[in-house]
Structure formats: structure tokens, C-alpha cells
Amino acid sequence: MEFSIKSTSPDKHKTACAVLGIYQQRKLTPAARALDQAAGGIVSELLKRGDCDGKPGSTLLVQAPAGAPCERIVLVGLGKEKEVSDNIYCDAVRAALKAIGGTGVREVSSYLAEVQVGQRDLDWKIEQAALVAGETLYRFDQLKSEKDDARPALHKLTLMITAAETKAAEAAVARGQAIVKAMNLAKDLGNLPGNICTPTYLANQAKAVAKANGLKIQVLEQKDLEKLGMGSFLSVAKGSEQPPRFIVMHYHGGAKGERPVVLVGKGITFDSGGISLKPGAEMDEMKYDMCGAASVLGSMQALAELALPLNVVGLIPTCENLPSGRANKPGDIVTSMSGQTIEVLNTDAEGRLILCDALTYAERFDPAAVIDIATLTGACVIALGHVVSGLLANDDDLAREVFQAGESSGDRCWQLPLHDDYQEQLKSNFADMANIGGRPAGTITASAFLSRFAKKYKWAHLDVAGTAWKSGKEKGGTGRPVPLLVHFLAGRVKK
Image 1 (tube, rainbow, N blue to C red):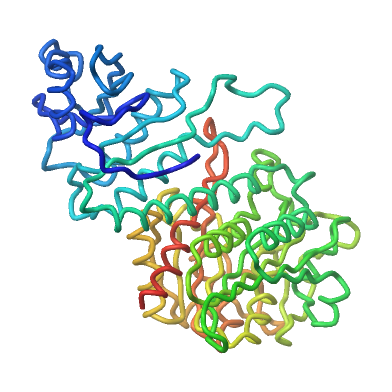
Image 2 (cartoon, rainbow, N blue to C red; image 1 turned 90 degrees about the vertical axis):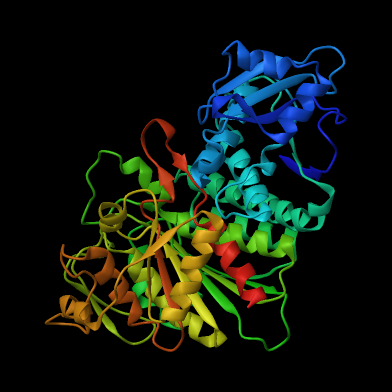
């Protein structure tokens, strides 16, 4: 999908399809009014006939009359002019693209960026249009013998603006395109089945991303992890025939010696729960337990494409969690890279067991900040649903940065408390800590566990169990929290 910007007037711009906004009470946006005049009043006539009422998300696709510069017009409802919200704007972009989807149109020009959306600026509207287009047009059908739709796909979206706005819009469209590409990578990896997307496959994809974008990469194998003393990570991997991998990626865009931001992504390519076996229903969705890893890979790619001037390290511990005669058993005690011992009370709480060693490994980079991203707890889905990701941190300033990145990107999160009191639930009679703290506050106690391995730097944790993929009819990876991470990194540059 290609995104671009132009500042041509709608009565002069030639395009296969023009997208125009209509408010309720049959009020035209400025672009709709200009094209209506050029097209002999066709839009006004349609509104008078009641063909389009301007209700949010309503659409009307019409063939433009002779003399009009466009071949088709899509009218999309925006509701009341003073009440256009973030959701109404994004729904309008989505509805317009879906209306066009059945036509075989290859390129479209949208004038919706002229619409006032609360306090949002042009940058936001441009970027969100790109993200919504990427989401709407994304397909994962490479493993099907027949594609879902044989018609030519829309491949170019031109976002129309005024000439005075060009410079700001160029940066926004570049960021939007990089994020869409990164999200598509994360979605593709998440949607692949566990028999294809193994730890080795994920490592090979990371190598391909690194090669294509000039990143440095090192992939550590079993013997390397043993030398490092990553006993916690290795304990999860030993139940599987697939060998573990630890992916270390470096992006050097900042000054030499500048402390990096470290992103850590959970990469469980399939999670059966191990000996603490999950219920069979919907277990197929546990291929998505590597979406944290996928978001790190996507973010590293976007970072390089945008050439952001900062240093970033991506760490991805990846393995499978399966039951076997060698697998972790409830009651086993393992020793982490930090030297702290862990009593494994539940083998299905494995994500924290691989992340804790990665967080210890992150110390060697003297990081300015560390963010780990993980589909960690079902408790987070119960607490926050599928709308926002869970955020916990040991530093309030860092938490505010991450939260604000979520607000500006539309990929929102919400902070939960991380008080020392919760550590009580992790006490063990036989080891330094247990890997679970019982049912109460499950998301928080999981983060409390991780915090024991992140004491030497500023750290934030994103629990994306409810936001990294969708179930049901729309089952598939979402690509979140790539937008949040890219905005966080871009914000670090501004800071």
C-alpha cells in the first residue's frame, strides 16, 4: 500500500475515486462543496433526494458525471460538524475504503483530512488515515490455495491537503507508512501457525529484517544461553523439540556512547501451557503468544525506515512451551541469570520465566529505559478488555511517556499500580520467589515478578494479552502495540 499527499483542489484533481465528507443536515465539507460546483451540483442533488443523510459511517458510491475530474465519488457521513470524534473520523475512513473495496479501484484520493476532529492536528489525521487504511486492506491469505478476492486491490491512497500544510503532512505520512508496514510484519508473524513460525523461523525473519534495514543482529543458541546462565529461560524451552533462540538486534541512529532504549519482546511461538496444560478450546490462538516479539521486530524495522536519531536494542527470547518428559513440572525450582531462584508453581506462567533472563541481559547495555512487551496474563483481558493494553512501571516519568505515546498514536494503554505490597503474593517456602501469586491481581503480580529483575534501570511493562490479537470472526493479529512503540521512540527524539 502506497501513501502520498497532494494539495490540488478537488475540482482540478484527476483520480479514480474522490472521498468526500458530508455532515448531518446535508452540510457539505469545503472539498465536497468545490467538487459539487465543478460537477454540476450532483452532490447537492443526491443530498436533496435523501440518498445520503450524513450519519456517521454512512456511505454512498456514485459515478461522477461527465466533466468532473474524478471517475467516482464516495460520500461518507461524519455526523454533526462540531462532534466529530477520533472514532467517528477513523470509522469514516474505514467505511469509505470498504465502499470502494468492491469496485476494483486501484487508487483513491481522500479529502477527509480537512475535517476538524476535536483537538487533533493534521499530523494525527494523516497518520490515522494511513493506519486505518492499512488495517482495512490487510489480508492474510498466503497459506490458502485460492485467494480471498481475485479483484485488483487498492494500492494507492492520496491524502489531500492545502499547500500550506505540506511540510508537516510529509512527516506524518512517512511515519504512517512505516507504522503500517511494521504492523503488517507483526500481523503476518502472529498469524503464521506454530508449525511454521518456530523460534528458528522467527530468528531467520529477524535476520532478514536486520539485513534489509542495516541493523546489527546476533542470534544466541542453546549453548550460548547455557554459558550465560539463563536457567529460567532454558527451563521453559526444554519441553520442546524446537531449540530456543535469543535474538539481539541493534539500531545505531544516535551518538556513539548514547545510552540506548531497550525493547524486550516475549516470543513464545506456541504456548500449550506445558504440564499445566491449557484447555483445548481456542488453544490454537496460543500461536499469538509471540506477538510481543513480533511488535519488537516491527518497531525495529520502522525505526530504521524513519532513521530516528537514537540508539535502540531489541531483545527477543523465543521458544515453545510444550509438555514432555523433559518439561518443567509444578514444584520445580530453576535458577535465573540473575542468580535468583524461582519455584515454578504453574508451568503456564512461562512468559515471565523467559522475560526475566532477558531483562537481566539488558543490564549490559546501561539502558536509558527498558520496555518489555508481552501477551502475559489473561487477568489483563479481564481487567481491561480488548481496548487498552496494561501498563506498569518502576518509574512514573517513564510511565507517563509510554501512556502519552499511546494517546498520541491511538494505541492506548492504562497504568496499573505496582506497589511493593503485591510482592507478598510471590513468596515461596523453597525458593527466592514463586512464579505466580494466585488469582488476585494477576497482571500486577506478574509485573511484580518481572520488577525483581529490572531494578538497575527505568523499566516499563506492557501487557498486550487483550490487544495483540482478535478472536472470533475477525480472528487475527492486530499489530499492536507497534504504533505506541514508534511514537514512544519518536517522542524520545523530541525530548
